[in-house]
Picture 1: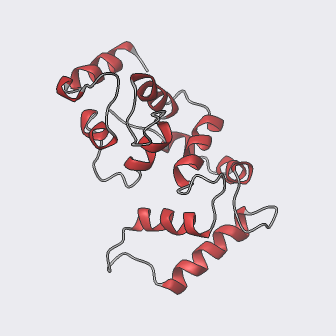
Picture 2: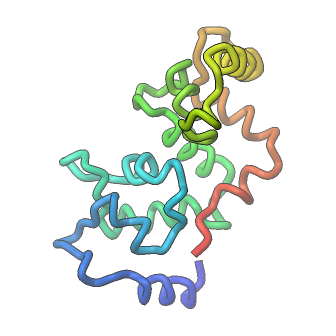
Length: 163
């Protein structure tokens, strides 16, 4: 991230949101004027937060870590590690059927018009596990996730935050 980008970003941050070293997750995306439609905004703050309060608040160091992971210069390994953690909704170190269902619902929306039927969801999760679950334990671990991501040439360029 160049100095011009960081300076521009710092000018966008509303100083009234600063509390002694912590920003609340709900305010983070409005501070950097990111799309409010990002379905993973709360998970992103949760994953990058080091707060003992587990409230998704971000210290300035957390904020810089987040920007670093989503920057163009972050490696595939770093980006895939954080993507995996964002998609691991129950924080158990694997993507199971429940995590995959939440992931799909986050991407498609949970309205009657966009929600998949139970059968469509079951089939999609089955297909994802068939392709991704190398050790056939019914979940996708980080290594398996990174293997799948490594075959996706657009992942690195699309896993970013545009300021």
